[in-house]
Image 1 (spheres, helix red, strand yellow):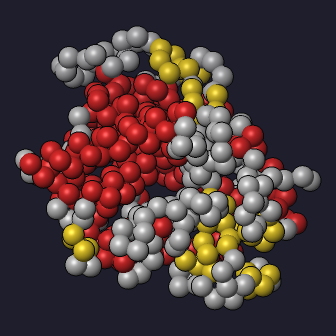
Image 2: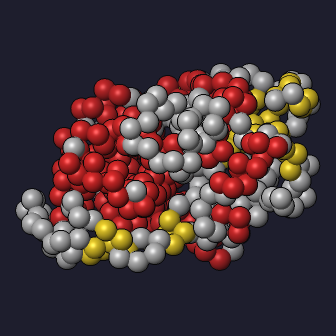
Length: 405
């Protein structure tokens, strides 16, 4: 079987689960050449091996980059992108960014989250149709992050679309990639200047005045953290919402079960996350020789762990290619593991539960009105998700009194 996990067309219709299965069964630590001139890397597809890499951060480092392409580096010696860094900086930086994303902060914001969900559904409920990706999943993911970091919701949609373009691996030196990078820079620059001139009670003000390991945050560090929060918090949640809805359409008995008993939604969300993890892979670079799956890998070489492959490993999940909202336990690796476990896990789960609960309650007969189409990446994607999902439903009543655009 010919497999090229660096070819963007491999992901044109979603994650290549057949390729993952083949590698997992026949070559779980697969040597993969790099078409753009890199030295090559090992593709890791078995659950046990992926978890071993994720939890041994001393051997498998995030620096200099978590992208397979060596040229995709963010930061320098004094300016660190959280995901591209290791202790001690990673430890202190993560602690600095954690307060608004911790479990207590997320729980205290659940009422506001439910109000936001109702507002989003109010925008479409009287129409009887919409594009689920643009009108529901996209707005949810974008507005949650806008509220978290202190940006205006409607205006932020342009910025979050720019973040999605960059997440698809667009070339930032020309065309839409350059335009997206410019948009992100301008938004971050404006936000930082505003917070320094007029401090607010929000996350961006704290970052604008931040200090980690005795190094004050300057414009460059603010840019790195700004892009981290926008990109990591928006594109992934949007994709999980959209692919999750599609899987419920494909499994009407599961959809019906949630409509009849919305208390099942939290467990269903875990299966949605397992079945289609939004993040394709993460690269690690070896700090010492190691053996993974019986294969010797040398210091300085790189590996990439594929979450979609690990999450369907039959050694861990019975009948792994079946979408089962009652699956328990469900130890998926969609949020990673170890010290780099996703910082936004609590918020991501909360927004998925809030939205799916509202959908099965307020739009119980939500149904597909056309085929789902996937985002077409120009470069090897790090995040995979739908571009469009037309849906229809019986029109209903708004519950809020906000003036809707």
